[in-house]
Length: 73
Image (tube, rainbow, N blue to C red):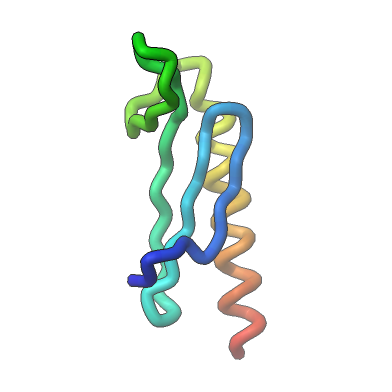
């Protein structure tokens, strides 16, 4: 796995980070938030109100990965 993501998709506070491990892709989903010190942090926990953006990010990640795989064949 590379140190840099292959691609990122962001919708609101939700981010899908796509990693390329020699043509085998994986996706990390996270939600950004500010802590008590007003610093930006990330979590893998989601609220009910986040779920539509989680689903949209997952769909867009799948489309992006499919295009990468199709372009290699």
